Length: 118
Image (tube, rainbow, N blue to C red; front, side, top):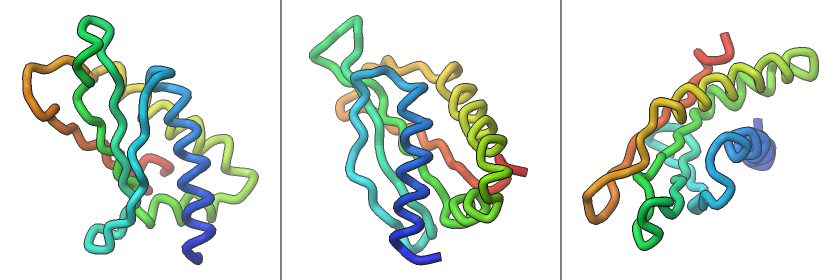
């Protein structure tokens, strides 16, 4: 799987994640971390109770292996895999408390591996 295909798949998964987090959430620049073989981006938003403060940062780490697994499922498995990803992210988000009293905001990592698609 080449770099262009991996980026396209990551874009698909990012759209699914955007459907769960607040509408005003900002996604940081995507980067590939070769030591972890993963795509990484940060998500945060202004807090409703204090608009001068941003939420804790969610660091989404999508392993290259997860992207490959997602692609190998093909069209027949894509909907099933999307539902599994949404369930995983939604569960993480429901248990996430964005409020904090730190500067800079703390970071919570959400690791997306191929295990969520199994």
